[in-house]
Image 1 (cartoon, rainbow, N blue to C red):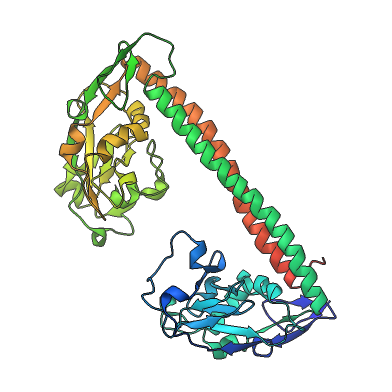
Image 2: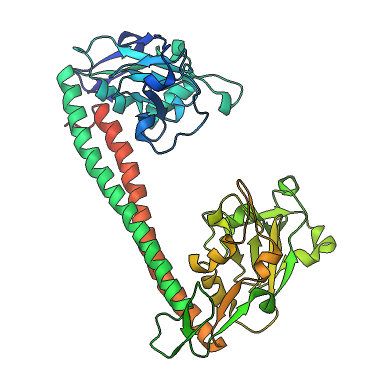
Length: 432
């Protein structure tokens, strides 16, 4: 091994060379003037590299209205998003097509000397992306650009061609294996989540009980155990309103508050409060808006959602604490003795939430009013059964959540291993 003279690489094998990118790739600027319907649109993504629009279900960003002035891309060309290459938005294309004129396109100079697939792996390492950042410039991160003059000056390894080929073939095989395990793990997570939903639904509706049943009179539930009741929320809860504030009223410290944005967060389990959901407001609200404080066993519902799926999202207050409901929220406080932990599980089911979704109107924003919520039905077992169901679900859901966490940790570890493996191999630190 020898020193490469490249700060982000360190040592490389003795028979490897280094070159500036300008000696390996040349800037291509061929423009397209065919109609949009006659070209193959190509974009580059931070997570997947270069993709055809026809191969992805939904593209992000502005949709092209025409392709005039778009840049031609050919197979083995390097496509670089000059704004986001420091985040990994660059890669070698497997396709012929056209891409945004805002991107840089580079053609390999000599395919007898370089293998584009090797450089695809090299250019998408976090270490190379970091170098793109240090070579870039701009007034703020969102306007940061790595222009071609700086990009072409970056030094990279140049292994022998047969070594490049061996590396690319090895990584193709290993990365496929790792990605397969990751996809299988993601599938397992979705299966665990579906199992969890099924366990909750069966328990809170009494479907899992071998007992005498009766017709609930409600279409979405069908039969329920004899002795269970159907009640409307307005008979169980008083409704309050969150603080009349906006994001601008939030502070770095103060009294904890949970607004609709945190209720819709993926971190929100719906059955307990995650501390990461809490934001802060000034202590003066304790005097001026004490009616927006929530207490143990209360619920905070979001009164707006950007999609139907989020209609019915809420937070269950699982312990006594000084906490405000924030903007765009509705507070539920119990009128009668009941196990709200049981109801927190009921509120997680799609069957229950569909009552709310069917009543909400909207296109880009859905409003969940007190009137809608007040007339929604719930299943109410005797209090002792409510408590037993909640206790059983706490235990069962914790077991399933543990299985999900194991899979998530495996995915995280594999993602880090994949990055490490690619860097070690493309820089010659691991022989293949």
